[in-house]
Length: 90
Image 1 (tube, rainbow, N blue to C red):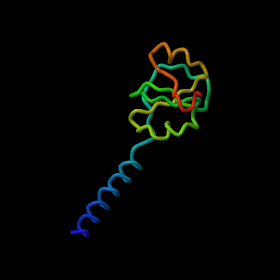
Image 2 (cartoon, helix red, strand yellow):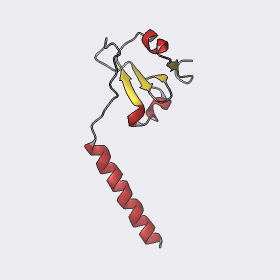
Image 3 (cartoon, rainbow, N blue to C red):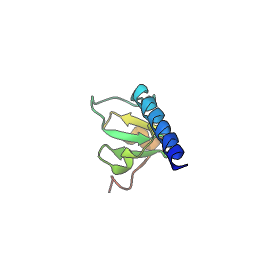
């Protein structure tokens, strides 16, 4: 029984890893201005939170909810209802 559970877990883990490798590093399409070649902030499109690139919470965002932001100006985001992360904007 334990061997069967281990095999099933291993198969699902491998399938997950294969799917992650095949999927490109996608970000959600946005109309935000791009003023920098490097990512300035990370957005959680689900919770509408703004994170800096070093925030631990940003590393936990699921790929489908994450969008990279290439501008230093937060006003467009705040006007659209985004809020600053309480962990990284102390």
